[in-house]
Image 1 (tube, helix red, strand yellow):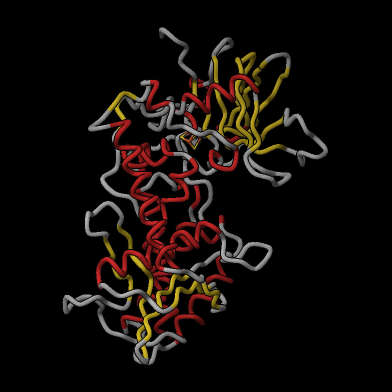
Image 2 (cartoon, helix red, strand yellow; image 1 turned 135 degrees about the vertical axis):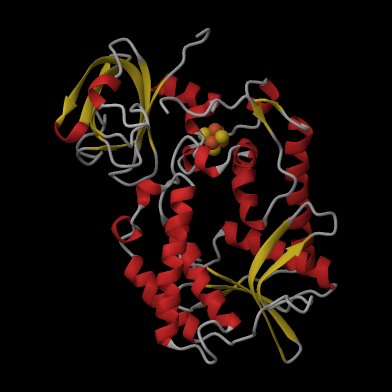
Length: 393
Ligand code: SF4
């Protein structure tokens, strides 16, 4: 595939999950594009493999709570469950178009640390059996849905003891901001779970807890009013997207485009950058965008090809120019989509001079501080180079 999937019609989602609300507040169009385009057809791979490691982490804890790792859980069984979970999420990554991050042992430097933490945390879990089978509200991975069906999601754990009800969400990443307070997105998520729990069971939870991978617990304080406000805003957000898109509308429709809110913090995680007109317009105006704050952050760049050639190992380099700045990207492989997925040779797939291209997720060869223009980019496995269609083509 040389070009991003041609998305003609965008659809609105039927519901929103607590984990999607912050992303949708930042950019409602991303919510709609996620609902429209299946994972394996999205233009860019996920921005990091962390989501898959997080899923494996949750899987181990969930298994322990169900009793799959023994009662009480045993380290040997949990280690085995971790290996199974990793195999499972690697299959998911392959299916989702994220094969560039495989194997996770190579792409995720903290994998061993997460494995140790997951097993340790799982060892401390109480075993509840298979939640939900009796038709009651379960205690592990429990689905909660608002009465109108507009907001729904799964809470990791509901613990009841001595008349108190504690909702817990396990996080493989950080849970607190630098001041020690729960990260805003996590707070919103927990408020929504509290409100959903109340809608489903008619009872407010006693406590909301975020549990980090070391087992540290951070309480999210709340009042029922806070939680109901969060639920109302999540519904209003969804209704707002539905009212613009209805049962489906062209992606090029100006009202649909009006749902886009391009900011670097939002767009750098978005897999739809190559098909987002607002983002491409900004990129076209600026020529380059640095995604993230790291010195070695991925760079998106746009320009007109002046030269291209083959390198050893079926790799290629491309030089392109934008508003007087010339950039070269080296090391594109057949993972880069300017080369056809059927294995077309790089030598025959090189873009010709005069072709407008956009490069996504290129890495600067040297740190951005010493090389601020990012004129030399290096292709990693998740780099995508697309030929841009000009108006009228
Ligand atoms: S690229 Fe940015 S503006 Fe466009 S849909 Fe994604 S997050 Fe929104």
